[in-house]
Length: 235
Image (tube, rainbow, N blue to C red; front, side, top):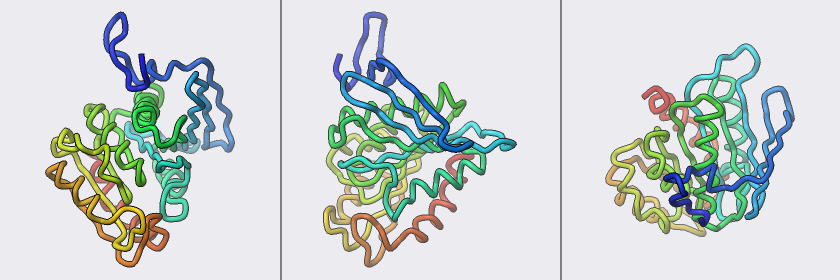
C-alpha cells in the first residue's frame, strides 16, 4: 500500500491506517497545548494540538491547519495559525496544526492532514472539521475536503496553488473561502480564482498590496474568519 491509501485485506484503508504508525508519543507543552509525534517508515508526523482550557467544554468541531510546500506550523500572516489555536481553543474549539512528514509530496501530505482530521473526529470528539491550508497546503485542504466530505464542514485557502485542486468540484457547494494577495510574487491571484471556478462556488477575498505570505493582512484575515467560521462551524 502506498501513502495514498487504498484497499486492505478487509476493505478500505483509513488515513490513520495508511500512515502505518510504528510508535507515537505526546507531551503537554502547556496545560492547553499538546505536542504529538507519530513515527512512521516514511517520516515523522508532528502535531501541535490546542485543547480547550480547563473549565471550557469542547465543542463537537475542530480546525485543522496545514502549511505550504516547505511545511511549517505558523501559517501565513506572521503566525496566523498560532493565533487561531490560542483564540479558538479558548472558545471550546480544538485546533490541530500539522507538520508534514514529507513536505511538497502532495499524496503524503494529504494522508497526513486526513489522518489529523480523523484524529480530531475519533480522538477529539469532533463531528465536523474546517481544514485550512496555505499555498501548496491549499491543494491539500481542498483534496481532504473532497475525500473526507462527511467530516469536513468547510475549506479555507491562503494564496493557494491551483495544481492539485482539479477535483475541487467534488466539494459540491461546501463552504469555501479563498484569500490571495494581489501582489503575490509566487502565485498570482488567478490561481485562487481558478480553484473557485473549478469548485463552482466559494468566496475569493483579494488582499491589496500583499504578497505570498500575506504579512500585511493579518487583521483583515482575522476579521473575515471571525465572520465566516462561526456560521460554518454551526452548520
